[in-house]
Image (cartoon, rainbow, N blue to C red; front, side):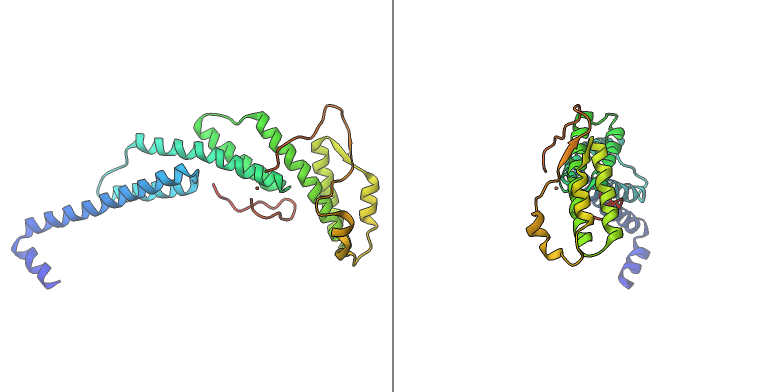
Length: 237
């Protein structure tokens, strides 16, 4: 510290100029590193990370009176939104395949937000295919959860899952076999250990198509673990 003070007193102009040059170089390196991180996040479809690093880069640039190249920033953002759409659609399909309808809808909304920023829209056919897969698997998952709740003697939980399964069935255009619903409601409490043997881990309910125009379709594909109906997954924009 004493040496720095002595140098400043002996060579005030040159010393301050050197310090200023070093500071600008440090900030420039920091800005470059943050922009690089933003590009990497954009390429992964991590829109939240991309915006975070761009914000840090702009803050560092501002400390030296500089700014980021608007064209470069926009190019990075377009990459992030484009890749983000693909990643969120993949997340939505994965959630649908697990019967996580609320998660599926969350990721579809996020993908739609990215598409809007890009000035484009999502393919309606793909959206409907993903939703139908989610409703179908969500209905089956709801029935399995209803059986499990009934076997534990949790009647309110059983009815909640039955209503959830029925809601998904309605969106799908089918109805659940009333005999199956009655069988679930009549499940004796304390029979949870027999569920896998009785129903099978991959059992499928009996369906009656309510309209010939409605058929279920979709590819099974993966997101956060299934939660209580209506609970949204953690955001990963």
